[in-house]
Image (cartoon, rainbow, N blue to C red):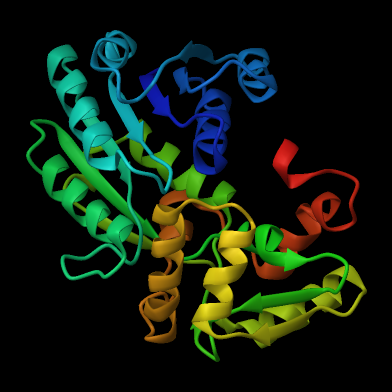
Amino acid sequence: MTRQILVTGATGKTGAHATSTLLDQGHHVRALVHRADGRAERLVRAGAEVVVADLLDLDAVSAAAEGMDAAYLTYPIAPGLLEATATLVQAAEENGVGAIVNMSQISARRDAVSNAARQHWLAERVLDHFSGTVTHIRPTFFAEWLISFWDAPTGELRLPFADARHAPIAAEDQGRVIAAILADPGPHAGKIYPLYGPVELDHHQIAAAMTRTLGRRITYVPIELDEFRSALEQRGFDSHFVQHLVNVAVDYRNGIFAGTNDIVRDLTGVEPLTVEAFIDRNRRYFDGSESWGNR
């Protein structure tokens, strides 16, 4: 059965993959994007109905939700998450949307020191009052972070994670999970799904996997939190984002991001990508033939 599905953040990492999967399955996707750019145009060519709107604009979001069966909610690590969540819930209620899949994060909890992580926990509680079905997904660190945080000239990963471990998960695997739930939300009502890649590694092992795949030496250099904070500020990240990353680095050291499970395989029938497979599939970002900022 063809479903009518609203995907917010449709040009982002998980939204784009969820959109393409749903379109491939024959569903109608209304893609909510923040601006009309090349990424939005690619969605149009793929068959999505693209709507340009601000997720904080209730009238625009309500209009986008009209006639939709289900919606995917994702919001960047930026101020406004709780307002965006309340806006989508109200728009969904007004238009009889039956299900919402919510992108949260594995560090979301009541006592989180990260402001963003605590707000994600609160956003989950707001969504729990929605009259339809709600499913929360809580991924560990994305595999895409390896693209964002490696230094190409030196081949170094300078990160404050000590020897702690996680199983990096690719956005495309998350997109398939999101699509599977949106296509048939009933069995997933009220569930919280932590999402992991297939193999738990520390960053020395991650660097070794990158070395094997790329054929050049990649080295993990553990750094302290103050150096990490300074590096983030030098890259121009805002204070909300920096506060989040520094505090989830502490969570990471304390094992909050660790673990593995079979949820990706069980929900999609596809094994999640290993680090090696992710690097190989995204080699163009590591060999300099394409800029990650222009994806």
